[in-house]
Picture 1 (cartoon, rainbow, N blue to C red):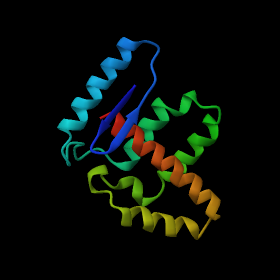
Picture 2: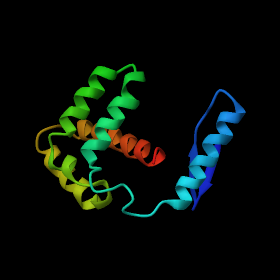
Picture 3: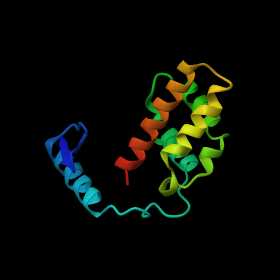
Length: 125
């Protein structure tokens, strides 16, 4: 099933057409009613990492390594930033700090994981 809103496409697959339609309806309502600041003051980037580790990571083949990577990401200051306040400059500062200790490919993997986490959090609002 696919939902399109403000030039952004969201897709998901389901075992039945009924489940797909229900998801599409919920997703459209969530997207149309979203307002900045709705995540609340307690939702931090670290909370998003925890949510992803709980809901998505267990179904992956590389679960162990992803849990290790998420735990490492939580040790950085970026994990304490509220999701509503997260800016590209924060991610760039984290990237520059991380590049001082690891290779470019490690940072790319971490950024890919962060992107998956943020996508999951936005899709499950």
